[in-house]
Structures are given as structure tokens and as C-alpha cells.
Image (cartoon, rainbow, N blue to C red; front, side, top):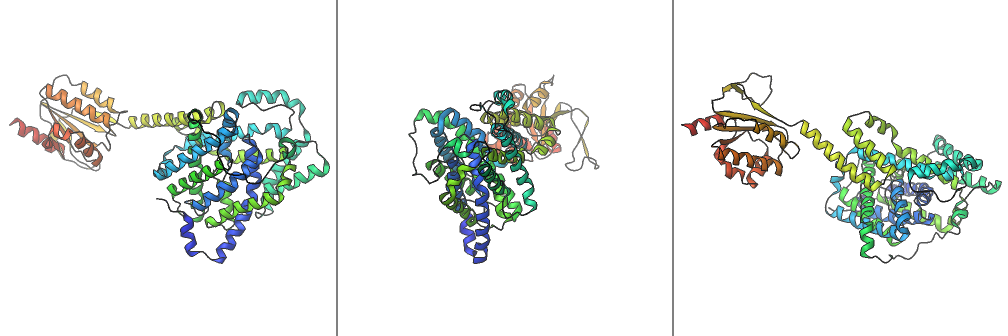
Length: 550
């Protein structure tokens, strides 16, 4: 269950692979630097929190992870949740929530829930991902345009109303820096992939701002002196009341972390032909978030873009991810003080590109044009993420998706009364020539098609009610019932009880599903109905009736 990929890769590790991992790790570390700073600031915390998270959590996730090439650290998906926690509970509340989320991820990993994450509907994931992208974009408008205004409101609509009043004082220098950053990020890969465009954008815009004395905010002017040294580990005082308040956002962090990390691992598998260990990955994510919280960091998960960068530059083992963290540590220790000169407009430009890449607008439009149920889940989750809260969006989105799925399954379920004089007995192709058997008088035959669960059970109940005169025998054909739940079992019990009280013999025919048969045994329905009255064919059920009559 828990076996880090590092143990497997080190068995056949050589100098050539170390050289590739070293190159990839250094490049990814350089890529991660501006992103870690930008994500931290957008989340409402100081820049060094993002760096600490990338160093500490990134190292642990690679060391213990279930993927060969996963790169861990802060990501854009957490911005919405983290910003809300900081606004309501402060940085200490965020640290506690991150610690609790790490514990939840550990429990999920040890409980082998890694494979269950795949059952989260894709429209729901796309809905909240696109919503997060829109919120990220909205959160950087102030710095993108250099607007002279106070604190940005957290509420989406209020935020844009406040922006509309401040657009009369746009800082043209900030706009130029933001647009230049975006253009460099877009077009620099046409020159080379070896040096990340975001780093080139930071160097060029920072140099231009410093030498030309552009009147724009920088990290230093906004946050003052920043210490990029690792603090001593520790946790603030945790009280039970605090845990009660933070358990919901902590669960959201854990669920987001699980989804993002496993999606990233799946993408990495597709690029490398590998096969990640989902439960081990969740345990590593839990450990990374716990350590991040102890060092005062923010939530971390697998980062798809940085993982892809790692793979494209030759990284094939967790060593590359560990080198990425060490590279970040060396950078901040020796040149971290220069980060204070980075313009806020540059970080806004970086986050705009991140938001665009996260938006998945093509997938969003494709799903919105698809089935009505998928579109409802997509749009509901999107709107709730943007206008209400991500936690609420995930909760309601999951419930809504489940109800719509049950509704769809119910539509595929049917109960039919066979009123013809002849009953087809074939079990294969319906168009094939079949034998037929005449239904004796005094026998009612019903056929159930589809799952007999609580969503469809009412159809069976209503169908049985249409019987006006009690028959001598009631045959229920169940050849197309793949599953049954407690509600279905209870209705069968009611039918048996009602039939017995009216002198009707109940017979079940063609129970082919092992799950259905198991539930019938465990609920003692086999005993109540009688094993001799559960038969493999309708023909056998009719013969059983004739034997009983004779």
C-alpha cells in the first residue's frame, strides 16, 4: 500500500540519469520560484510562505510520493480557499487548516481511497477549476492595471463593483509591465524551452522598473523587508473550537489536494508510460502538507505544469523533484533579497497566464453543449465557486451530480407486466428465433429491467399495485437486474408479505446477478420465499407453479 517510487528507482539508478534529473530539477526550481511567490501573494499571505511551501512540501512529496516525476508545491487551485481562510481566521487559522488537511490526506491514503478520487464527475472538476481561474483573474486586476485603491473585497460581485470605481486612475506603467510579462511568457518558448519564460519576464521587467524608475508597486514596497530563511518548525495553539470552524475548509483543501495531485500523476503517467501508486501519493501529499504547516507554509499538491516541465527536461525519478526543492532553497538563500524588486504587475501578468491555462474554456464549452445533466452540474459548480464559496460548490456539486446520475439510472430502469399469452424464453439476441411458452391462467408475470435501487424501486411498487385480482402465482423475472439495494430488498419483502396474505405464490426467475443473489441470501429473502421458488428460467418457474397446483 505504501511504497515510495524512490525505492524502486534507486535500484537501477546511474550517473547518466542523475545528470538528467539534476538538469530537470534545476530548471523546475527556477520555474517554481515566481509561481510560488505569485500564488502566495494572491492567496493573501507574504511571498516567503509560497517559497517555504515549495521547498518543504515539494521535497517531502518527491521523497515519499507514488509518482516518479511528480513536482509538489503551491498551486493556483488553492488560492480561493486559502484567501478565504486567511480573511476569516488569519494566517494561524490557515496553518491549522493545512495541518488538519494533511492528516485527512494521510487517512485517505492509508484507507486506500486513492482509487475513489476517479469517481468525482469531470463536469464538477471542470466547473470549479474554471471558477477558480476566473477568481484568480479577478484577484489580480488591481495590480495588473496598477489601480489606486484599498484592500480588494473578497466577494466577486463587490470586487468588480469596486474595480469599476477605480478604473479612472489606471497606471499605464503597470499595464505595460503586465502585458510585456504575458507576451514574454507566450512567445519565449519559441526561442528556447530551457529557460522558463516567467523567469525571463521577471528579469526583464524588474530590471526595466529599477533602472527606469517606473512608479509601480513592487514586492518590497508592498510587503517591506522579507525574510527568506526557513523558520523553526512549530504550530500555533490549537483549540477544539478552532478545529470545528476549520474542519470544512480543511476537508476542501484535502479534497482539492487529492484531486490535483492524482490528476497530475495521471498526466505524468501518460507522458512517461509509467504507473503511479495513488494511495502512496496521497500519503506523501499528507506528509508534505503537515510539514508545510509546521514550517508556516500554505497548502501544497502536485503541480501539473511543473511536473510536465520536469518530464520534458529529462526528469524520470523523484530525485529531480528533490533537486527542485534544493534549488529553490539555494536561490532564496543567496539571491532572495533581490525578489523585493519584482514589480507586482509582473506577478499579475504571470497569474493571468496561469488563470488562462487553468480555465479549460474549451472543455467548459464542450460540456456545456453536451447532456443537460452534465451542463447543470458544470454551471452550478462554476457559479457557486465564483459567487458563493468553493467548499459549498464542491458539496452541492457532488450531491447534485449524484441525484442527476440516479435520475438517469432510474430512466433506464423499467418494470413491465407481461400480458401476452406467450412468453419468449431466449436469453441472447432478441431478434433470434426463440421458443415460447404459454402463460397459464392465474399467473401474473412481471419483468424488471435495470438496477432495483431506491431511485427505481417506486416503479416496481407502482407496477405491482395495478394487479386487480390476486393471482395464484406471481413470477418476477430478474434477468436484467444487475444490482439491488436495501430499498429494493425491502420492496421485495413487502411484495412477498402482501402475496402471502392474499394466498399468492411468489416466484423469482432468472436471478443471474451474483450481487443480487448475495443480497437475497443476506436479507433472508431466499429463506422467506423458499429456495425452491427461485428458479433459473421462466419456463421452470411455470413448471414449479404447475407442480404446486397439481
